[in-house]
Image 1 (tube, rainbow, N blue to C red):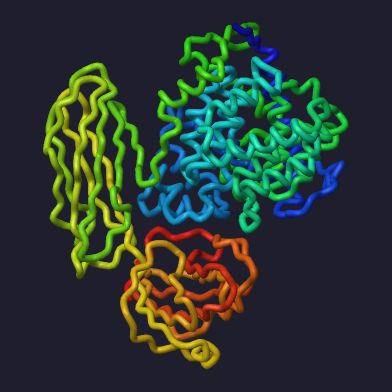
Image 2: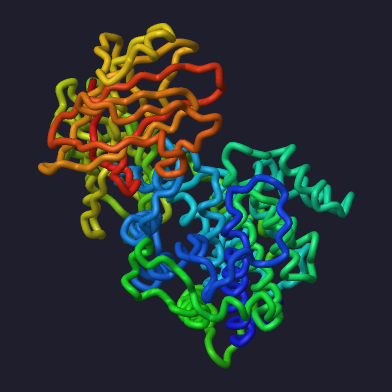
Length: 619
């Protein structure tokens, strides 16, 4: 049993945010560099540090906790994400687009998301540790809910690992004990655990920082995606091993591994900051940044309500922690102390599994209501083409202390989505019991062009207020495609090609290229707005691409050796600009399959890089 007093809590929480700011400022300018670096000081020094999403997103989560309350659901996270954080980088953008289409977490993090195992969520673990100090399972539970908005699998494990280490660090400073708990919180066979273990084993055998870094890359390295989580989690913790007693050298060693350097430096800074407390962090690294928080307010949309200083952030985090701890039976606050007992690694492993924190299915949506939980599973995925039948299985769990009995019903709220059935048509659940319902609907072949087709399920059980929730299916992109020889691509100039070929349903953004030659494609894009929309035509591609919108060529992309199939991070040649008219628009494209090994992608966003949730594609 350990004791945590209020002053120690405040000191460690302030240390968390100080360390986060220092490490992010150190690594920010080097982000994406894949070579070994040689930093021993900040590349850029400014008051408040460098603005960084690692901290900004946690200000958004603090806003959610302060305004929505402690019992955040995955749906709350998704809504907060759309309303209060504007960047659409990589997984952020794809997760938000999925939510706009009605695909809520965890499906929002999995569907059509090439960056679902990246670093966007492990970097935002600290807030959950700070409001659940010494309660690692609760910190992991919150981290999982956060992560699955825009991530899957490895990234979820990574955020839980960090949250557990950080939560435990409020009552335990020993690095090796904290590492044992962290590794016990995730499956042994996941890539993240394997990356961390090979780092630790190599360090212990060689005490060689470069050899340890290389061992990680040899096992799980992803050169194409510098933000892939497993390699960066190991790099973060490597700095803790190479310099366990030197804060500055530790964050430098983490950052000098390269790759997602703002994330690695920031997270290690926060881990050490919690373990040591703010008063033990070296002033040499803290004083140049001051007490301020540097953010870009235009992208956080918190309307000036965010904390302005690290001290204010600490105080407001502490206010939430008092309420959160009270729900676990701990009365905490100024002048008080609480007793906390960390589980052993074996106990923690069992608790994580018993809580279901290792199970996050990809084709599932989780929804909470006042009286229970609805878990919507898409057995064949969420894509529904005209003429096809969509099926969803709904597991309803009664979380009340009374019986839940009564009818359930389902109905379409989208024209053309019909033949809706639900079976069984009633439920009778004792407390804790679960009923599985199968909901099915057919989308008519001549259904109006809608990006997604929606139905609603209503629960009308005795003893609870009637409750309903939507289930959404998304349409694929339909193209008419034809293959030609390689010479056909060079012959295309300003005039868009006439395409007569077979209908192809593309379920994501990746274009199904032939083995060689030219692929021609044409589709029609339906803009449901009554207004013209400026549009950004995105064609991240290793292979050459030409694209026409309403007869005008808007993209002439020569291809690239390496791409990031995201909304923002490729060269200018991968993007074009145009205008979508209200109603139907024509889109034609030609892809030349080169000898390079790589992919071609296609999607549309607004000029700022936000993916739309209402455009329909029909050949």
